[in-house]
Image (cartoon, rainbow, N blue to C red):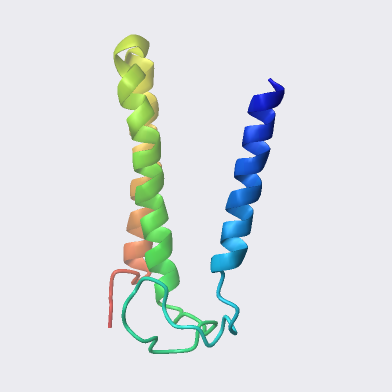
Length: 110
């Protein structure tokens, strides 16, 4: 047990040291893109346009739908009718949110 603990402590220390050795020492606001490959078009801490917030909320609505539908699909056969009713209630709430976003113009891009 002590040998395993020592190996784990040595591995953590080695990875921490490797991270410090490979870290960029420059100004993070002036550093280039890490994996994008293109030079940045604007400042790193610039604000997003307000039209992107409804897009983000719509994405989260559909993301939550998928997050809850995968486990539901695993247990719906065992649970039965109550699971189907609960999922349709959940989907109805999401549909109401998407209809509200549509009415407010979240799907107009220009």
